[in-house]
Length: 146
Image (cartoon, rainbow, N blue to C red; front, side, top):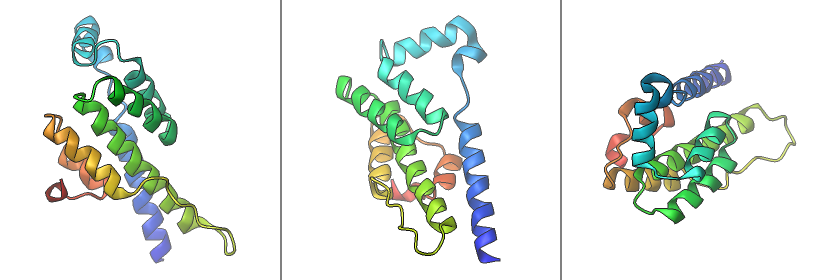
């Protein structure tokens, strides 16, 4: 019963994060949304590609693209925020795998720790790009930890 409760909680977590990151300012605001997006991340194809990977739940690929984006502009708080979210999602994905794995199957270890995700979210906050409380809750991170 505990395993079912845990798996159900993780499923709700994954669904909520997916819904949270499916917002597209271009669809809502048309060309104005695109102009604002370009103003915030001018010519940053790596950020856009990272967002596509994040939406597709390809977290390791997303992290690599956000790394490239940060290398181009270390002041892009949104890239740190999204990389932190991708890292936390990857840690959660490994936890789900380990909870479901059959006996004798090796555990899957995430390439990043939750602390690494927190550091990215903390850096994003320093750069003026806060992560909302709902997202932090779904990632299992307390606002006071940032």
